[in-house]
Length: 487
Image 1 (spheres, rainbow, N blue to C red):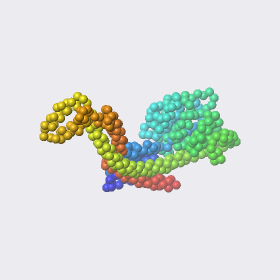
Image 2 (image 1 turned 180 degrees about the vertical axis):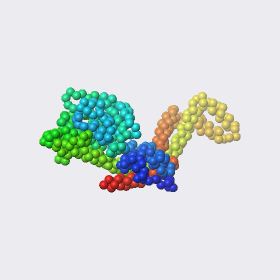
Image 3 (image 1 turned 90 degrees about the vertical axis):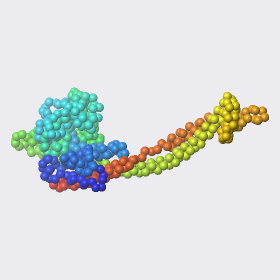
Image 4 (image 1 turned 60 degrees about the vertical axis):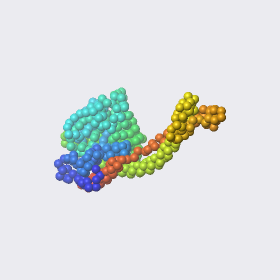
């Protein structure tokens, strides 16, 4: 990884023929590609590394390297999350079934208390319950703080390829009602929590049900405190209002109730929507249907997420490169500091040796001054030393023996005339040695420095991240091409 002669990465965007083969849209491919760059790195569609030596090193693995330790880099989701809220019978589940062209959600007049259901695309039809859903969507793990929620969270995996479903996770929420209806969990707080983890919130109001129910209005008000830019409002089932003046009256009522609860109410819109009927009977009164506007809101959220993820990737790569530069500067400073510490440490070591020699001398002097020892030295060792041919032995013994008055034979205290002064000197010297040892250890506590292998690894990361920057530029080109083709 990072070698200059490494092969150039393949085209990060498959050709149009391959697109037709795998059926991926441009936005879906880009979202997946960004996700894979974080998880796997420069890996081609067949699972092999696009860059020699790259292996499967993704942005997350680079960021988590102890040399960098970038804990604020997270993997972007490869799908847009859209939550639908509203009162009971507002048509949330029906809209999801229509959007994906498959009956995965239960619809009807009965109040459903199953809770929250994620509807996502996959290769096989499957239903996940409780803990399995939290394992599948680990970013909402904190939702389990709400008592009773685990048994009421589900995931429906569909194989549908309709519309832009491959890029979207639709989150169906419980129908909100007033009165004595008891939920097994705090429904409003759960919605507010999930709002932190979605990209778009569709709020449906049923004109013939409980569009103005207190719980719905409370949820809308709470969501507007932090997520006003994510909210889009619609009056659903508009075709069930037979008379135009009744429809206008309901629209006015909903608008008036929302006006005091939402931000930027001057730009507030409440389009009417309804699902296509099974029969071809024309409506008695033509009603504007903004159903495609809902789809466009979802498509817009997808496009914004693509832009956000590309920007996030740019910022994260810049953070890695900046951290690599900081690591080199820190390593250089540490090496300089360690050199200074080494010199100081050797200085303390030299002083410690000198003090140690003095301490040893004082210890021997005190030992030789001890009566029985002095008698042995003067009575036996000193005569032997005088009789030997080595004068140095006699001089050494005399150097450690205390001074003795030749006239009286009395022993004179060696240390400034203080009896047992050597013990005091030893105490001071021992304290001094302990202090020097502490200072030496403190000074010789070197900062960690990078090995040659670490430096090579960081250099490889730098080259690799630059390659990722080129891939990001290609993804942006593909994104703009997709916009022009769409136009």
